[in-house]
Image (cartoon, rainbow, N blue to C red; front, top):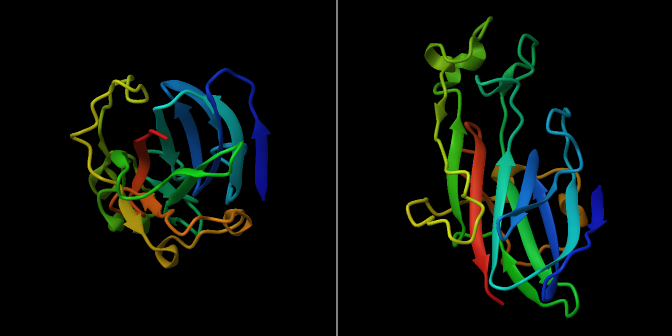
Length: 207
């Protein structure tokens, strides 16, 4: 399914963004929150794509918070059931000039992505009968990020480049195949699709 939204606002250019993520995102443009995933974060197996049209001035700083679903800070899902496991993430996006159809930008290795939450620290956590967040194999690594990370002036030069992942590795589901992705658009995430649960990614689109 593809959720479509047209937002009112000012800006020199009308932009259409198309985004698919496992499992949730929030999009910021030029430091302002624009839209978040239409399906709530805690929804089980919430696979969908979003198409949103908005106005913005160039250069345009795009900052997206990506989240894979986790029940708590163990990083696990389906805790206490036979399906208890570590989840996996993955995201892709592209941006077109809404008036001309010209491709303006895509997710690729030029994006900067910082892993904010990594858990569990060991796969052994998923095998525990009563996994406890913050204990042993179920500990997490959390990176504190400045609240200004979405703004154009934020210095992201210390952030790693986005890690590119294959469609085979991510296994994109519902909604992904409803978008005509440009060949240059790539699936990105942190280095570890399974253990990197929250990832902040940024880029600047100039034309």
